[in-house]
Length: 333
Picture 1 (tube, rainbow, N blue to C red):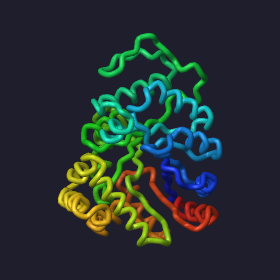
Picture 2 (cartoon, one colour; picture 1 turned 90 degrees about the horizontal axis):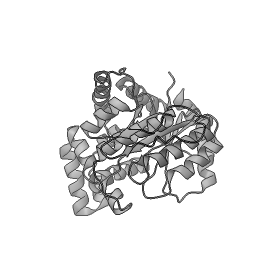
Picture 3 (cartoon, rainbow, N blue to C red; picture 1 turned 120 degrees about the vertical axis):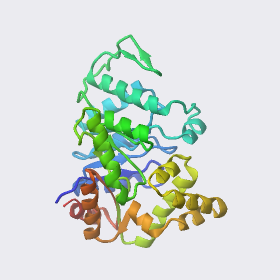
Picture 4 (cartoon, one colour; picture 1 turned 90 degrees about the vertical axis):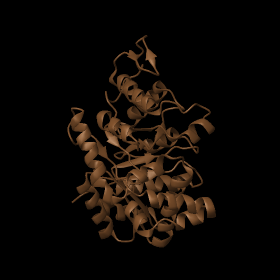
């Protein structure tokens, strides 16, 4: 069986750009379907996305994610619409609210009405991409002059994927979005959460498979298994302990509240190393499988596929782009 794979490209810098593009081309040549470009408080996503679509021919490029506070919906429509033209229709819009820490303390904006704001951004982006005049009456945005994008668009609709966690925002994803970008969800819980998206899509009058789900953790393929497992555990502990309350609440809803409490408590008492050490190894592997086995990786993809995932997250950490290309091809099948 073949699998649609996706990779993540960071925006924190600190790496030779030519090497990054060598890795991206290796992923494309190895059959990877989509590359997601992150944005937080590092480099902006759109510069790197532009360079990527200029250096690739087939692979889709998505924002994973940009927030709905620091740019207006019209500015995002300009960015994504232009990139879609440049790429020949290979762009995916990935949106989220981010959190109060980033929006208020980095961007200097009030973190108000996040769910309503996300909904209105989706509505407005869809209107502008469709070519229809921008006439809109929302709670946050009101437009009456009927502006349109003054360039020939590649498509009348660019797929929109939402990064959501809380029940109301996940329901909105099922109602409006083309795709879902979940995070930190153990493999054992994937059938449950994917089933909720499917049933909520049907309740909204859409097909059960209207929303493409990207796997929340996926697979890390590496020869440094122990080191990679420690890094995944450390990153997870950071999200639970230092990235607001969203991720802690998410794990609690999935019946991992005691574990989340223990991780946060260990971090508070002993710092990052203690927080990472408090992550149970079996939970770490359930969140993100770290392996040096192609067979084990494909078994995880099969489990994700059975749960309802259609786009599988993978990181390949090997010696050279040539070797990475071969691994990607073997993983994709």
